[in-house]
Image (cartoon, rainbow, N blue to C red; front, side, top):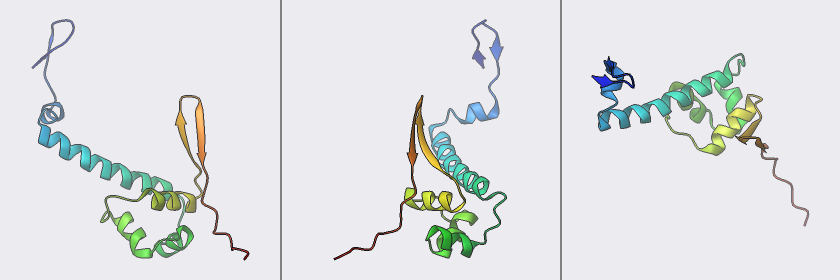
Length: 115
């Protein structure tokens, strides 16, 4: 049991007790990050009925890479791939810290060299 500021006893929830175990906490945090990524990818594609192949083509990725992300088989993703998928879904990204907003522009297509 845990004492609160008013000296009343509060029982810990099962989750709070489990989070006191370092191994459980580490596994939970790792798996939560993977779950959060899946949820973010699903939210980005909501209302956008692109097939795996269409999204892969728009993002410049291999269809297997997109399918593995959608299915959860791939649990980690390169930032460049994440950005390509976000842009393919029409999202604009920016870094925000307080009042500072720094846009992350899509990478432009390679320019042809004029030699």
